[in-house]
Each structure stands twice: as C-alpha cells, then as structure tokens.
Image 1 (cartoon, one colour):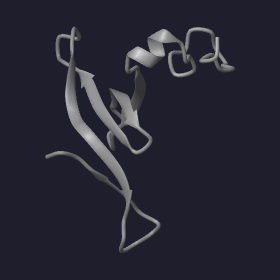
Image 2 (cartoon, rainbow, N blue to C red; image 1 turned 135 degrees about the horizontal axis):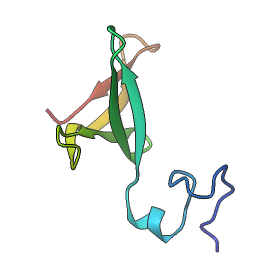
Image 3 (cartoon, one colour; image 1 turned 180 degrees about the vertical axis):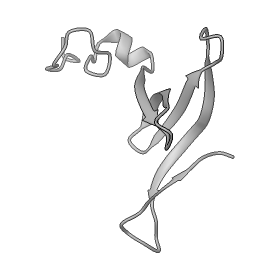
Image 4 (cartoon, rainbow, N blue to C red; image 1 turned 30 degrees about the vertical axis):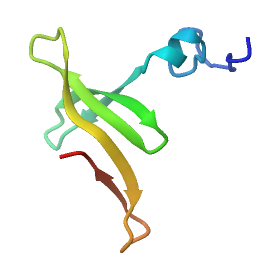
Length: 89
C-alpha cells in the first residue's frame, strides 16, 4: 500500500495513512494545565499545516464542544519571534 508510513505504534491514528486517515480527521488529545494546576483535556483537529480546530468534552462527556474553529498560526510581522493564533471570531 503506497499510503502506509513507518509508525511507532500500530493503532496511533496520527501515524496511520490508510483509508481511515485519508477520509476522517482524527483529533489528538492535548492536556492543558492552568495556573492552579487543574488539567483541562482538549482535542486538536489539524486541518492544514497552519490551521486547526480545538474541542473539549461537554459536561456530560458524551460530545465534543468547539472551543476555537479554523485557528490559523501566523508569524507576527512586528516581532518575528512571536506566533499569532487567529480564529474566525
């Protein structure tokens, strides 16, 4: 199969490039820690090299609620060391 790639784990959807990965956007789990040490579980869905969506579990835990949609990472023209995150809103 020409869409297979070497991968570290055989069930990691981020490393698979088969029919599922080509036809479905996988969400990668990302745990954020706030200043009080509380962990917030979010899921990042990559749309392109510089665009992504962010979701988190709703209070019931059954569905994902969008936090930010179509976020684009761009370099700050005034300070090249900074990356700006711009969304639709």
